[in-house]
Length: 301
Length: 241
Image (cartoon, rainbow over all chains, first blue to last red; front, side, top):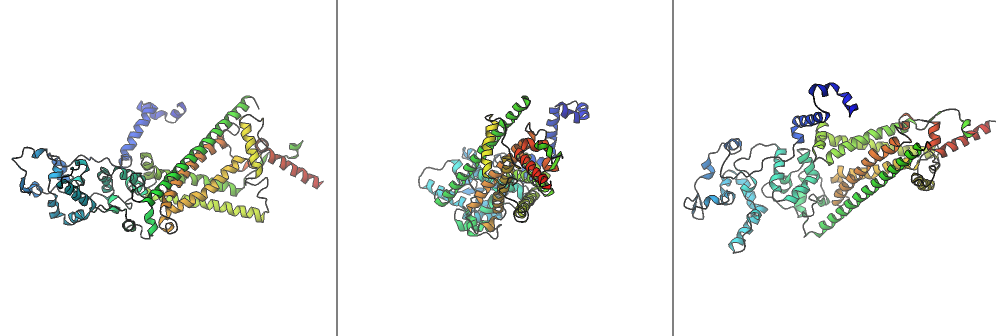
C-alpha cells in the first residue's frame, strides 16, 4: 500500500483523500465519462403508460405528442355502450388497456394492425375470448394475450429511436411475458452483440419473429427464412442452431431438438468438470511444489 | 570431475526462432484472451468498457480473429520447424533433446510428484525439457488445434453448417468458451507461477526471453542434460586427443 502511495504522493496529499477514496472517486468519475457503457443494458423506465394520469412533459416528447386527446379518446361505442360510461361507477376501476378499443390505432397504422391480426398474439387472444364466451374460466389478466397497448406505450413511446435503443426496449417489452426467452437470448451471440455490445447488425427480437406478426419459429422453413434475412448463404442445417437454449424454451413436441439440447448440456457439463478438475490438480500440485521448495530453502539445501 | 571439462558459464538454450515464437505467442495469447473474454462476459460493465476502449465490438472481433491467425501461424512455424528438425537436421524426435513426450517422462512425472510430496530427496534427472515444459508446449499446441476448429465453426457458421448439423455450432460455442477459460487460467496463473514464482526460480526466469542459461541452472534443473553434455564434450576431447 505504501509503495503504491509513493507513486501518487502529490495527488493523495493535495486532495486529502485516502487511497480507497481515490479509487472510489476515479470509479465514479469513469462511470460518468462512460455513461453508455457502464449503465445496465435496459434501465429504461418501464412503468405503465396507460395510467389514468398522463405526464404531459413526457407525452409532448412522444411520437403522439402532436395529437389532441380526442383524436384517440373521442366518444367510443363498444357493444352498444358509450365509453366513457358516466353512469357506470366501476368504469374508472377497469383496466384501461383491456377496455380501450384498439381498432382506432388502425386508422393511422393500418399495416401494423393487419399484421397484428394475422399474428400469434391476436390468435391466442381470439382463442381466449372464445373460451370466455363459451363459458369457460376466463384467463387471469396477466395471462391474457397482448393487444397494442400491452407492448406499445401510446402516450410515451418515442419516435425515431435508434435501432439499438429499440432493441433494448424489446428486451423489456417482450421479456415481460417471455422471461426465459429473454434470458436465453441475452446468453446467445445475437443478444450479447446486439444488446450489450451495441452492434447494429445483430438481430433483436422482432428481426427474427416479426414486429407485429410475432411468429413462432418452431417450423424449420419459417426459421430458415428468418435466418436468411441476414445469413444469406444459410443452408437448411443452419436453422438447426439452437438460439434459445433455456430448458423452458425447447418445445416438448420437438424430440429432435430435445436430444440436441440434452447433448449440448451434457457436453457443457463435462467441459466444466474437466476444466475445474484440471485446474484444481495443477493448482494443488503447484502449491505443494512451492511448499516443498520453500522447505528445501529453509533447510539450506 | 565432470563439470571442470566445460569452461563457459553461459549456454544458449533457445534459438532466435524459439524466442520469437514464444514472445509472439505470449502477446497474441494475452490479446486473444482479453478480446475474447470482453465479448463472452459482455453482460458485465468492465468487459463492455474494455470493448469500447478498443473501438467497439467490430474492432474487438477483428482483433480476436487477427490474434487467432497470428497464433495459428506460430503453430504452423512450429510444425515446419519439427519437419526441418526431423528431416534436415536428422534430429531424433524421441531423443533426450526433443520436446516430444517419451516413456521416460511418465517415470519422471511419478518421481517428481514423489519429490514434491517429500517421498524422494531429489527431483529426477530431467533431460533438456522437464515434463511440465513439455506439457506447456503440447497443451498449447493441441489446444490451438481444437480452439482453431471450434473458432472456425463460429467464424463461418454458414459454411460449416453445410457439412455438420446446426447444433454443432452450439457445441463449438460451449467448447470454445470452456477451453478458453481452461487455457487462460492455466497459462496466466499456473504457467506463470511454475516458471517465475517458484522459490527455485523466483523472481523470474528470463531464459525464454534472452535465450541464455547458466551452468548452475542446467545442473540444478536439468541434471540429465548436463550429464549428457559433459559426456559428449568428454567424448569429443577424447577424440581430439
